[in-house]
Amino acid sequence: MAKKLCKLAKKLELKEIAAAARSGDFICSKCGRTASDKKSLCRPVGVEEL
Image (tube, rainbow, N blue to C red; front, side, top):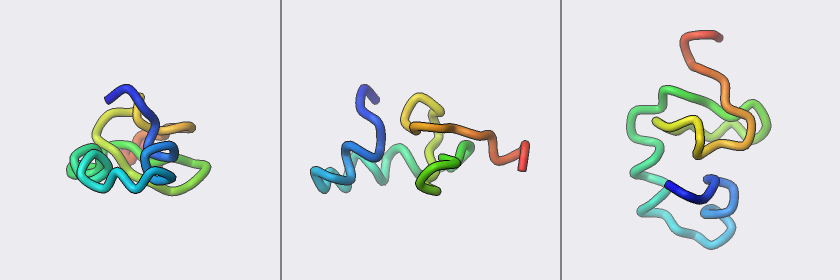
């Protein structure tokens, strides 16, 4: 995924957001979104680290 979830959310790209969030291995410490790839988030933190 090339774009961050924050940018996709502004454009309402729900299919891409859903695909990135399915496993939710990472969470953004800024907005709280989850994603399977940390590159999809602004400030990723591993769920295991919390």
